[in-house]
Structures are given as structure tokens and as C-alpha cells.
Image (cartoon, rainbow, N blue to C red; front, side):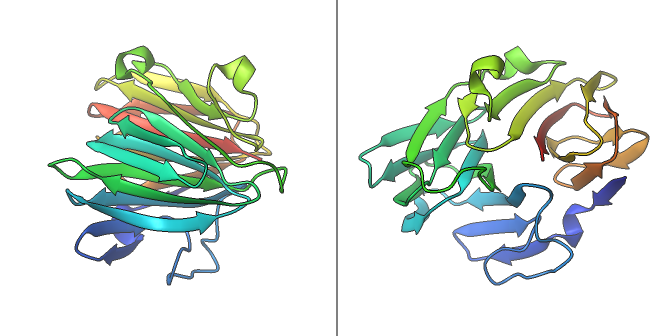
Length: 232
């Protein structure tokens, strides 16, 4: 099953400093048909104005993956961690028993990012945070695993969930494949560009919910940057 969810069908909120779309139920948006996809609970598409951001707020027992596609996001948390994640790179926060953090765009330009929440397999563990560079050139024409429940095998940031977050960049006409377990759930979003997934056309910021497929083949109609989550 492949379900294309056009960007314009996603919940939209504009708070001035934050212009965002929700792929799944979040905050004041509730749709019982869109409560998540497998262990993937949240996929927010955020546009954060310059010199603004999210003030300190708490989380617990959630794996939070932030993929920055333009600008940069600056993080600080109750563990004393501080860091800046720039375009193309990724940060992971395992909220565990509880953590308070703030995320600010301290840049002179807007920052755009995907923030993903994945339900962990294990609750009540010590919270943690980390960030890492993932050069876009390294994932040209191929999937690179950014965050994984088996980080040692995938050379990725660790998450406490049976899931992988991957990215690929394609030139128009290029194809990338993913060998899928049909019992699992995949969710695909392009930062930009039009593409075709197993014969179905999709565009930038559309959501593509997939399950029951053994092979996922993505063909770029235009240059495209793709993010894919595979989860139980």
C-alpha cells in the first residue's frame, strides 16, 4: 500500500515566528486517521523565523530526530548540552526519564527542518542528546542511515527504537531502492523536487505512507532530497 498525502492536505499552523505543517496529529490538531505510522508518531515540517525559536519545554520517553535542511538550529538542555546543527546535519534527543530543552534559530535567516518523534522500545532510560555532520555529497544516489536502533551496524546516531531514519539526494533521472520488510512501515518525504515511488507521483513536502512493499523504488523527476523512516 502506498498512500500519497499531498502537502496541502496536511494540518497547517502559522504562528508568525513558526510556520509549520503536521503530517500526524499534534498539539491542537487531532485526526484519528493520522495518529502516526508504525512507531513514527510525529513528523513536523517547520519554518522558523530568524532570531526566534522554541523556549525551554519538557519531554520524556520519546526519540526526537531533527533533520535541518536550511539554516541552523541551536540546542540547549537541562543536561548541560549545547550545540548547533546546520543544514544537512542531524541531531537526536532521547528524552528518556525526562529532559527540558530549548531550540532556537539564532541565525539571520529562516531555518527549515523536519522534526520526527519515534516511540521508543524502552522507556525510563537516561536521557541523552547528540548531533552529527552528514555531508550531502556522501548520500548522493544512495541511502545514508542518519539515526538507527542499531547504530554500530549503520554508522548512525543512536535511537532507542526499532527504526531507521535515512536520507538520499538524487539528480533528475536517478533512482534509489530500499529493500523493505512488508510487515513494517515506511514514511517518505522530499525536502524538494518531484519524484515517483513505485510508479506513484509525489512532490516536495508530500507525505508518502508505505507498507506491504518488498521493494521501494524512488525515481527523481527533478533533483530531490529525500528522507525516509522505516519502523516496526
